Each structure stands twice: as C-alpha cells, then as structure tokens.
Image (cartoon, rainbow, N blue to C red; front, side, top):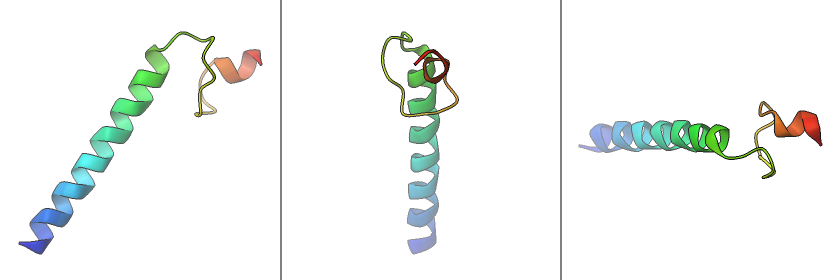
Length: 44
C-alpha cells in the first residue's frame, strides 16, 4: 500500500513538472521564466 502511494506521488510530481515546463514554453517571452533554457533568458 505504501509503495503504491509512493509511486503515485512520484508520477504526479513528474507530470506536474512536465506540465509546468510546457506552460512556461507556451507563455509569451515578455514574462520572466524561471527556467534558463527558455528564449527569454537570452533576450534579457
């Protein structure tokens, strides 16, 4: 039971991280992105 819960938490965290990165890439470049791989970091 505990292992299943642990796997569920890990899967959820990975999915949330992926969706966060996807949302950051979809946002307009005028917003400061926390991720260094986005194009906005090159402009500033």
